[in-house]
Length: 218
Image 1 (cartoon, rainbow, N blue to C red):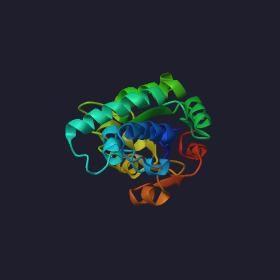
Image 2: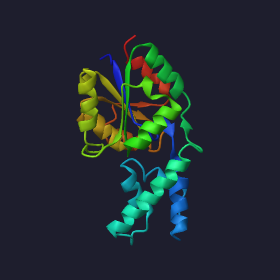
Image 3: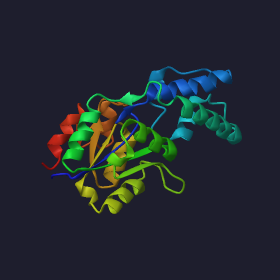
Image 4: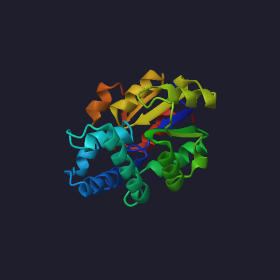
């Protein structure tokens, strides 16, 4: 099979965002006199959206929904001011994007990060014009691993889902790819380990971004 389009996850796939996410959350935790977490822990907190990240970071005793919402608002405000302090593309990503664009491959981004943040971050690091579609979490659209957003991209691009590669670094991404009928590629440089990717249906593990070129049309 030769592939002509690709969907990228954002955090842990295109960009190493973990330090800015962790530092932004830990600062808010400190302000409330809650325990903070090492950066490594945040690799397992992210992946299912900002609200889920907030719930995992807060002490288990924090169950009041109004407080969780207020805390999430504080975190997002802090992150909106600090998302570009340490975040940067993974090695080889920019070269990969240049090569894919030169070959006419349709590229899109699908993240569980909120849509406004997704748009801002992609535009800052890569430019929105390089991608056909850039979607984060949107009201009324189920988050990954639900395949609806991935299938929406395929439908709007008028390219069958079977002609899509899907690159992500988590089990959620692999589940999304398979549910959408796309070829699930596991990015081993991201936040999760290779065994999680394989267990959740990765068809192939990628160790360097440029390996993807072997899977696309010439």
